[in-house]
Every structure is written in C-alpha cells, then in structure tokens.
Length: 436
Image (cartoon, rainbow, N blue to C red; front, side, top):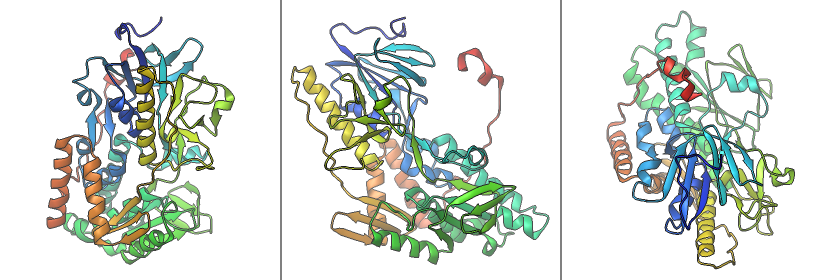
C-alpha cells in the first residue's frame, strides 16, 4: 500500500514524516509551516517527555504527568497534522516509504529524530539486572525499586541484608548521575528519616561510579570539582576514573577490584543512538547518521536527521556536536527554516551553526553548577538559575505551574508526598493482536 489508509493525501502539499517526538522532533513539528506541508509525526509513545527531569520522577519529587505532554494536544489546532503511535522499522528510500509497526507511510521529506537510548556497552546481563533512566516508564520503575528496597529494609533479617537494601550504586557521572546522586543524598538527610523512623539512615550508602577522570566531563573543570566536592560533603562515595566490570549475585565489581553488595544499581552511563535500517552503509557512523551542514543524510536529498541520532562533522565540529537538547532543538529550528524556504521556491539552504548557550547541572538542594561562556559559578545562584531555565523549558502552562508549586512546597517543607509505590497490573489486554 502507498500509505496508511487513514492518513489522507493532502492536495498540493508535500508530506513531511518526522520519526521521533523528543526535543528535536517536537521542535521540528512546531516550526515547520503547516500551511505549506502536511506533517506526520510518529512516536512509540503518544506524549512528549522532558528528559532532564526524569531523575525527579525516579526519586519521588515530581509526578510523571508534570513533565509529559500529549502530542495530539500540542497540535490540536493544526488542520493538516497527523500523529500515529508506532515504531519505525525500516526505510525504503527508493519508494520513499517508512515501514512501521502499523503499516507503511509514504513521505516526500523524511526527518529522523529518534534520539538515543541507554548504552550498556554490549553487556546484556547489565541490561537485565540494572535500572536505566531514559523514559517515563523507566523512571517509575526506578522509583518503585528505590521505594521497594526501603520497604523491604524494614523487614531485613540481618545486617548484611539491611546493608544490601540500603546501598545504592549509580553508574555514570554525567548530569543525570550527578543529579540522581544529589537527590538521593537530599532524601537520605531530610525525607527518608521521617518516612521510615525505624531505620538507621547512617547505614545508607550512595555510591557514584564514573569511568571518566572527572564528573560532568562535558562541563568545565571548575564545575566538575564543585560537583565532586558537593557530593562528597553530602555523603556520596565517589569512584572516579573507574568502570563497572560486572553485576552478578547482587555484587557490583569495579575495575579497581572494589566489590559493592547492593540490590539497587541505577545505570545512567552512556548513550547510543536509536538507529533505523534501510539506508546505505556509508550513511551510518557507529549507529549515528552522517549528515552534512544542512542535516541531509549522506547520499540523500530528501532524508534528514537531527538531534542525538545524527553526527555532523565540519571544520567547527571535528568530532561532532555534544548530544544535548540545545543542539537537537537548534538543528530542528534550522532545518524547519530551510524547508519553509524551500516551500517558497528558495533553494539555498542555510548551514547549521551551533550556538552554545551554556550548561547547567544541579547537585541537590541549593547546589548547582553553571558554565555560561566566560562565567562559571556554582551554589545557590546557579541552583535558582537551573530551576528557572527548566521551568521555562517544560511544555504546557499547567505543567510549568505544577512543577513550580511542587518545587516551592518541597523547598519550604522539605517534602513532596509523591513517594507512591505503584506496581503494574498485568492484563491480557497487552497480549491482544492489536498491541503486538
């Protein structure tokens, strides 16, 4: 079939199919001229997820609905916008067709913005035994793991079992790892003793293992040092320039020989692109799609890739750009402008030039680091700046207000009542033919 039958062809308009509704895909869908193009957005979930705050869902600081936004609601006023919940499987570039889990979709222009997933570096055993943090479901699963360990600690039969349940190992010293460690340290000090007065939280250990020589390796050395000092002062045990060799029989083995017994290994180390098959071999570089300075995939004029899943190598970026939200959104904005110009018969595409607006990372209550060009600072000022920037970045006014109120209440009261242990109920509805 030429396309999914319930997506009508739009007379006089070319169709842009966007794969992925993350930072890049959503921005692309917003900035494209809907009067000039028919837009079809496909994603494996029907909502946008604000990834920088996954760790707060995982630690019970925010509701998942506060950082999610339905794709259909975001575009309900657009007349020629179509969304489908499905997964892209293969690209047939000759026929200009995307093969998906619900059928085939024909395109005139294809934009691949599939983002990244957790990288377990080929160790499938770690994938099965640790807890990742790349989606709302994974954030809720991590929250359940943390809360279940605390509940089980109340009934520990001996000191060894208690220690295992109260030991948390975070693998990865990037922004997510640092923020997760800081949040757990805050919980240990101010929240958990009130929830579990029977437990002695001086026995709770938080380990942060990072294969890089310093935390927040993508930020300045000043930011790295501040993050390390702040976490250490809050009781986090740091293992820097060391990697995890294995996690078997509830024992984490680190490359220096250290062994940590823990039921709670939270894996936020590294990312890998969500790739899609069908393109020429030279269009891929270690799974990422090779693009030119206009984000055209190598060897194709009508296929583009933006965000984490692509790599753009140029004189100004000899190793490609950092895989962060800023790059993804700026690529989307530039590509949308180019395609809008193309709809107006302007064929000269503007090359993408990345504008680094700085980096922020929080390390817990009243502590954050900021790299803003020549200005590098830390502490409470950086923390308030981090709060403001993230509130402004959240999609949906209701969500902005909800997050703001939760944060203010937490700041004044040292508590937000969101530590709910909600386990999924399995049903045959997931086994029906419609959901295969």
